Length: 307
Image: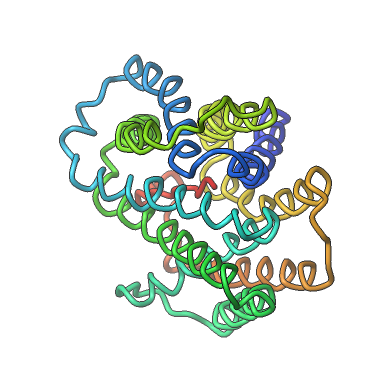
């Protein structure tokens, strides 16, 4: 990988590992609707002009129904549920639970007719990953924490289904137009609830900075860097950063919010990460199935899961 590719990769490891920290800070003083609106509105304000200049929104308009479904599964529901869950959970725990998305994706693909056989290693990955989730969640299955864990699991479900929608129905929509359109739709939908739940007084500088960082850094900048990374190194290598994000989320919570780094968190991190890697590993194709040199590869759309 080129030096530029490594720089972009390192940026993505951080940019989509720290949103949990900023969400945790923001929900201390503002409503969930305000958090989601600030993030989507700022992100849309940057990405919509870029998307317009790169070709307009004709493809997005032609596929508006699956675009709405994708937006609901990737942004509208997940970002609200995450913000609400972090009222009760630490940012590091939330980031680790979201790391189970690849495992959920494999299960859903299997349930919806994926013809690819799951070998022993992938089955072991599913079981190991689920064990990691159980280790992390079990001590908190009571009261508000249990509800919050359920919210995060719904987020993981949405993050796993959204790429399926994109793969099946939105391959004709360029990634930048897809992201910008989704953010714009979400900002419009959350504008009313955000206005109705504005705090009586201006939030602290700490919270305002967190909201700006969520919108400009973790959304607008992150999507821009993401597209550059995929263009530079390809989808398969570029998406490896999703395995590093949980470690960044844990480190940020421990360093900046004083969240505990316990043996349970470390054990669950190892189990979930190992399970995700094993469950999503693909068997190398044998010589008879390998494409000839220079032959076009099948089209494939993969979507990252921003927090």
